[in-house]
Image (cartoon, rainbow, N blue to C red; front, side, top):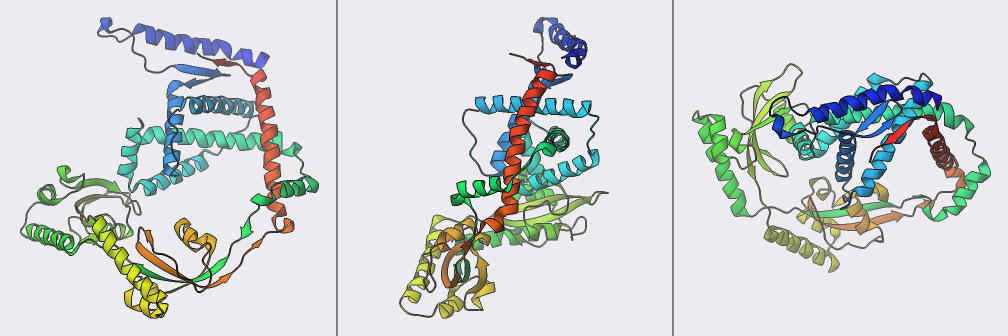
Length: 442
């Protein structure tokens, strides 16, 4: 406790300064009362944990769940408490690491932060979309970058502490690994089946009237631009995207940051001021203009966007076509001939629908569900995917096998070691609570 007490006077000064700042209120408008900017929720050694730190952790937790497609709990009270305890534990580990003169690699942390940001940019479709999402959660990109940097720094300190104080004392015996294998036999991985499959794809297309209407709008837009009208004015008149009121201006982008490869390809080949040919994406038709090229290669873009709406009638029409094709196969026609005639999958249609041989685990979860129990020679029911309606035929199937203990031994050894490290780390952190000063606010 002697080491812990040395940090208390400095903390009292900090707490007093915060209290005075809150009590003093604004310089002007003395009648308005104190303005609460932030508050301390806990103090660990000489480090304060602020309410804003906890709030940002909670927002990052929510964003990570959304990124992974998981449901956000309705009541976050328990999550908030767990996050606070995690912050306290991180501060304790950092205090122990600094006491042992450990340092982290700041350059590696910076690189990891930018990689994580790029992942979110790809997920949300653009940097502008990511910034909008962050604003919804009360954060700026700078807030997010700072929070991620703090998290990654904490993780590096944790690895250093584990490497010095925990891992050297952890020993894993072979009988412990075998016992784990036998106790979790039902959870052991298996080599999945391999399947040779053929497919027929019928895409869901908007009605002829919708396509003709969009084509007419594209023609009118191109004529207006050719006549010399300002791009921003044409965008305000014709574009149906959220940026229409801004004259089509959608922001600044680096290579790969746009959600569609065709858009990326066009935007980074166009000279400044030139408008692209119509580009068709999953969302609709885009006419893109490069407004400026920045020194770092990023491009400021504007677009005129025309959505293409697919109705339930379009889906039903495509389903009727795929069911008719399946009925012909069930009635005795060769799958390969029907696929060559009907399928809109150009890669397989010219091969009689044959796609190739795949491990079941390499296919999408939706395809796995359809093909998991389908035996050679059988044809699946139609299945609707984002690409359209599919019918599959399994041409051949090679059964997988359960991995043996010897095949899994090294991986299982790592699992058992990690469990032991986790247990030892929990005890170590509990010991840190008595070594360092902790003041948990109400």
